[in-house]
Amino acid sequence: MTEVQYVTESDFQSEVLNADKPVLVDFTATWCQPCRMIDPIVKQLAQEWDGKVKVVKLDADENPDVLMQYGVLGIPTLMLFKAGEVKERVTGYQPKDKLIAKVNPHI
Image (cartoon, rainbow, N blue to C red):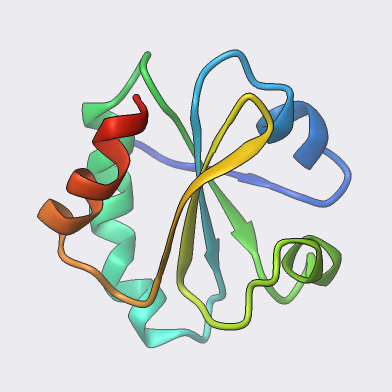
């Protein structure tokens, strides 16, 4: 299974906002049970969308400024960025087919 890279406040601009393709960001934390439940789905999507969508994780506890900037109040939250803008946002655990249905129109 694909290992998903973590981004931080310091590289968020270059890795997410300035990316040349859509980026799905998984706002997560190690202590969060729903985050652990969605993790295998995020890894599957990273593998299936390889080359089309960049998939990254952001640790909510270590990067609070990014959470505040985008109004992330609950985790897991998945956000799809395209050309530096949020195109889609999903909060809470969602099954894989629902995530795909929300993201597909933007890729």
